[in-house]
Image (cartoon, rainbow, N blue to C red; front, side, top):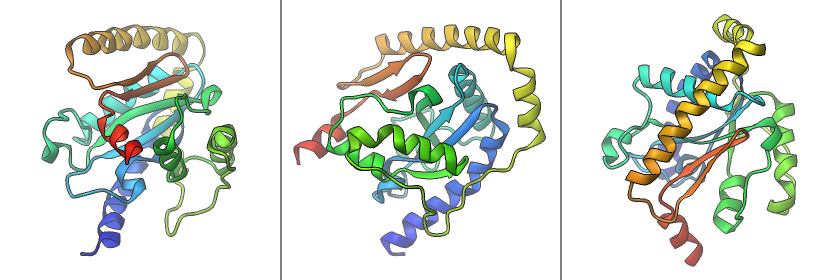
Length: 223
């Protein structure tokens, strides 16, 4: 199997699993990122995704992503074992609609990665809004267009509609507050115990980014 066919087979498997985001409330957009988007994936590569959530629901979205994809057996939870990470989702970046412009520092690696993002879930309008928000630091304006045979998944399942309705308003605000407290506590604890290399870690109400080891990015910039 040549490189292009291999990358396409990885994407096909990922796209088959994307439809399960329709069980997660408050998800607006999902992008393929990382090695699959860049075309550098190997057989043990995981599936990096950037998830865009509705305002004031970022911790709720992260919670449901972890619960659902853990139950399906599709979430990476052991980064020290490459084979166990193969074809598993790595949820390392979440943003909300108020923070579509990604955080600095900006460099050649992040610019290339952004330009290679592949939208696989959501509406064309919101994807274009995301592109517009990042146009200034990238130095060019992306226009949404279908990539090969990749179509956006936009079906709305009754489960998602029910959860959104139930978790709107005061109940949803309370749940978000509790989930935020729990998750930030775990994040802070892991930062104290893990051996990190120049980490890019952001955790607030509008963006959650977890790149604990940036040596590979550093090497890319140097080369």
